[in-house]
Length: 156
Image (cartoon, rainbow, N blue to C red; front, side, top):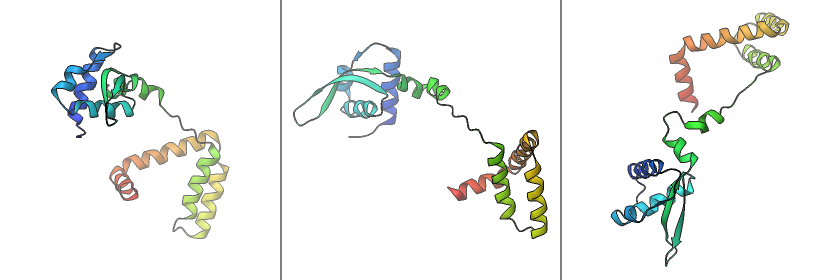
């Protein structure tokens, strides 16, 4: 059995054109012996639904198939509703940001008296000042994008 990405894309595209109907797959299966295993693969990943028959030896052959919403979203350039609904919002409290910055200061090569002064100033920052500092740090990271990419590559 060959996992065939081109064939899978053809199958999903074809099924998207007949959505939401269940489509008989006999003609596809008759033309290419790899259709049935690839349909099964797409089924296992939740990209299609369908009905199949169990042949002697346990092989499943799809008689009908229908693309699922996950399959439609997979084909969509923007990820479809899955991408929209799957957005994760991360909120960091001021204390968390303060702790992250403090850990970096403490782990730096700065002289102890300079660390102490910075940590004291950091503890004094409130709400909008923390937000402003965070934006400045993000800007500094973006300005050093090549170094940031290098750090990401070495970390992964």
